[in-house]
Length: 324
Image (cartoon, rainbow, N blue to C red):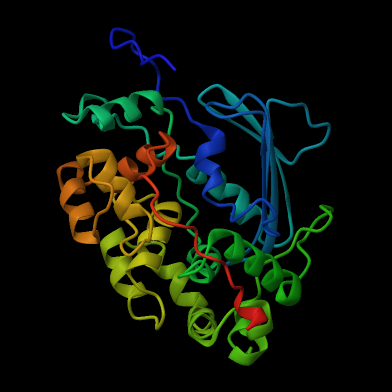
């Protein structure tokens, strides 16, 4: 792929598929479906989301680039028309969050295309349409993120699917197979042993239960600045720095959030920015420090650029916990 022409000023449009992809946890996510006709500023696509809102359960069905015969609402963002249907008592709340989830507030030129590091500047130029969205929904984002702690992505996605199928209710509306996340009042009462057959051991089960005990607080914390919200989240047992760094971006639109403690991330950043095939969290943060308050954006740009660290040694055998 040729490098961007530095003499050509390109608009920072919204990369719809990429900005919404962070809300889908695996291709079989029972709560969220995203279909696009390709990467970049996708011309056609569909986004479906079912969740629990302050107003109750809700579903939103959004399409763009296609004709919908019947729709509740239409919005136009930067020349793209989105047709929206919403269902359930929380449907209107969820539909009202869609512009923020698409990153409409993330419009500033952050200067990364002029970064001193060639790799960062090149990645920023190639993916200048990347936005950081904000769902305002800590409960929904925390659950699959906690499940993803310390296990492979494929196993985590399977557990999230099973958890919602076992304990989540059918989503409002006519969309077949769509599920809500488990309701807080139910999830908080599920004993840890009942989640063991799903592959979720006691430590993660206890963290899920702890999150479910504070739904009202989570909505209030979503209105706080990222630093204050992070301090509140640290009060929940089982919610550590990796989990917090993973959810602040998609929930609050925090472009500086970094998931410290990730198995692969420290190596990827060290390789991309310093040519070092293996790194530590301390080294990763040192290399990212010049890009504050855009460290999380830089990390995502490097991922989009495909800058993975070299792999050494044999692959580790995956042993799902439910088979122990």
